[in-house]
Image 1 (cartoon, helix red, strand yellow):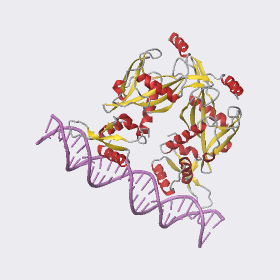
Image 2: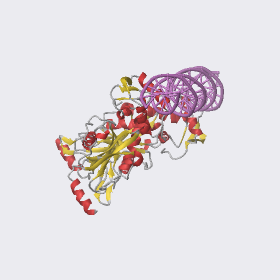
Image 3: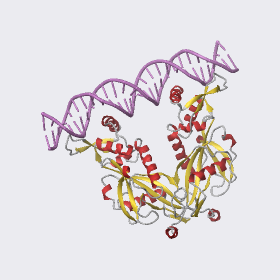
Image 4: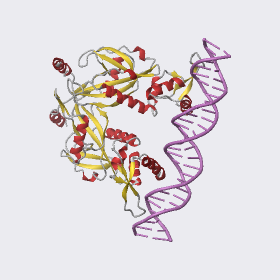
Length: 238
Length: 238
DNA sequence: TCAAAAGTGTTTCTCGTACACCCATGT
DNA sequence: ACATGGGTGTACGAGAAACACTTTTGA
């Protein structure tokens, strides 16, 4: 069997190989507005331009160590680029982007991931070592992005919107306890469209009936009538 | 600028590169049953086992030629593996699969695509040159698959089901002209659940009202009451 | 005339949408 | 007391689901 493997490594080696990266569309919601984490590139190509954080995947060819998985690479980059404890943050693959010419240096395949960061943690991101700076940018005021990152970001945003209704991702973007209005703000930010407060409340009540959320002690301090506070029940990765 | 590129090709070359393939989940509907095209592997690893058709992506590092795009590679494999004129078949990316160890030879990243073949063409597939044989296999009687192709196939099937309602893919799996019952058979095959004939007919009528389908001349020859025949209007890639 | 499938109608329930309205509270 | 946002009620319509029913054909 090892003979076969050795022989085939030889034969397969004839095919040229691309470089492999992961790029991350890391979202949060601040001020009822969907924002994405961008880094300013310090080095060419596209030095000085804004880009999605990302990096090369650690790849090996040893029989017993072929390197890290794509998702592990994405999580590693997520932690490195934010300097936060986000090992358990929600993260999902968006797809592969590999058009020739997308990186002028060489053929690079990028596997894109989307991740979510709680707004309570969002202000604490410090930026990675290899990037000049990192910044939360509203999707409504995006600068020109390096490479094909504008396309990646657009696909990531659609991916997120598509998963909103049938997964618990909205709960990833509110504090541990939250009000109905706060959750609705997340939905409107992701969908980019207003939702009727009354109708949203009814959907919310269904979640309560199903045991998905439960009332939490305490109330929000507000300049007006204080809203009830709720908590998400169960693992957030529905 | 070329200096930069040269310098960075050098620096980036430090990162090991994986091999890159595309794998295809090619579906059709035969006898009201969703089937996928499998090939019997002629060579190790997994010689003799069934697998999804696929192959290496042509990758280059020349400044002016970085090789073919992922989708081009998928289309090329689609034609090569079926020996049919399917350059314009419906085809969509499912995602990237790159777990270490998924191929025992070496680190290989596979970008999975789903494609659809019209049932009228399905019996004509001859199989690729590198595979022992190709066969349409019902999803209900799948053999063990090579590599992680079982996982890829499952994701592809879900991708298909998710796109059924909001895209015109069902029309890709019926002849140019079709009856309501034939289209319903495609839906039930993809969803794996029965649909009420009456309710489906009403949904269908809505499509007629919206101008998505129109009546076509002729009737089906059947042993019983002949059904009206319809035609899809507009480009099929909604 | 009979089976089989095409095609229609009806009833019920759920859910989205729009919108009016009451209620509680901090200022 | 009053503005503000929390929270409730209602009415309409689209559409899913279940199912009975009529119609049209070939055998």
